[in-house]
Length: 239
Length: 222
Ligand SMILES: Nc1nc2c(ncn2[C@@H]2O[C@H](COP(=O)(O)OP(=O)(O)OP(=O)(O)O)[C@@H](O)[C@H]2O)c(=O)[nH]1
Ligand SMILES: [Mg+2]
Image 1 (cartoon, protein in one colour):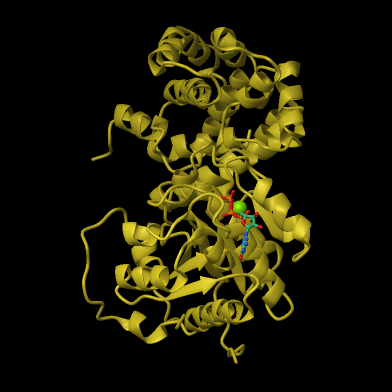
Image 2 (cartoon, each protein chain N blue to C red):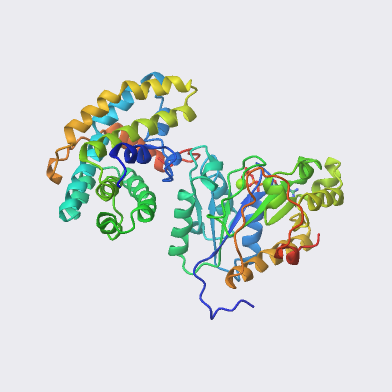
């Protein structure tokens, strides 16, 4: 159990990014549905058209509507999560102030391309979401989010048989591209995978509360790295 | 050695300044939705410079003067609010001030002007700009040019997203209204009291701002 006697300075900030339509909003709705009874949550969305994601999440009814805030990006979703994070930081801080103390603020990036990841100045930890129906090759293509986000989610695995993708193969490719960083093969219809996801998130919250979570930048397109001597190896989620 | 006013002005007018400038269209998005076309944008720029932007520049100059002399800010804020009848525009301005002060508190943490504005409740953007000018030694005329120039560039940059354009065209618009920016600076540079700030609203821009604030599927915050 979290040690509530040690006050934490602020909520864990969890970023969810990945290409358009891969299931970012659905994943956030899922986390809210699973955890809103036990944790104080807030959500910030960054859609290209401001409030689509926020409206989807509000209509999902998983969280009080005012805990879901939309940030405009001026058609620059990449800028808003990476170069000039001001608007997002202001929204997160306002949520934290309005509902103090929050445990977790979930931030959804605007659907962008494979190179878009969050600045570590905005989020403590980030999830990159891929759609299995986008094709088994995507995981092999790599990029900063796929290779180095704290967690890679290969989503909608229930669709694999319909789109001719070998789920296990895609997860193995992704794990190889990630030098062993965690991968969750998720489907909202697969209870076990949902538990894997929430377990991972709760572990990040524990690390944050213990002061052991150091935000890491997945980076821009960077030279390929090999072994990872640090503690990532200890929190694998086995798919 | 303190940096030259030229360099400070470049820093503050640079679109790369991290103050969420990419979220702003200076009212252009609702105007375009209501039928404003590319050909109207130069007139839109000039209309703003003579009205809402003149208020903003005037308030910034007066705020700077008040902060440099240790005079109270409340009358300056009141003059700004009285000249900004749109609640949506006041909200936008306060949000922009917050973004700017977040940066100013890091760049000039000990400047009394910045501290004074950080201590007030929900300051407006021109008052925050006045504090930045006071903190970094920017003159009144430079400050007024900054306000005018930033407004023009905000519209021009948003036009590239909202209207299909050759960027050389929109940069030409900016270039061509520089004399208007200079004229604005001349009008407000010597202002010293809140009552002297131009009271020049533009009801159509205010109405658009109100519509935008409640519209779905916005690209820009305002
Ligand atoms: N079959 C299946 N569909 C899913 C699953 N998760 C999400 N979807 C569907 O995928 C579509 C896109 O989901 P969203 O959550 O809106 O995706 P997003 O990444 O937020 O999209 P943008 O914000 O537009 O980039 C929706 O139709 C979801 O219902 C899943 O586990 N299985
Ligand atoms: Mg979404």
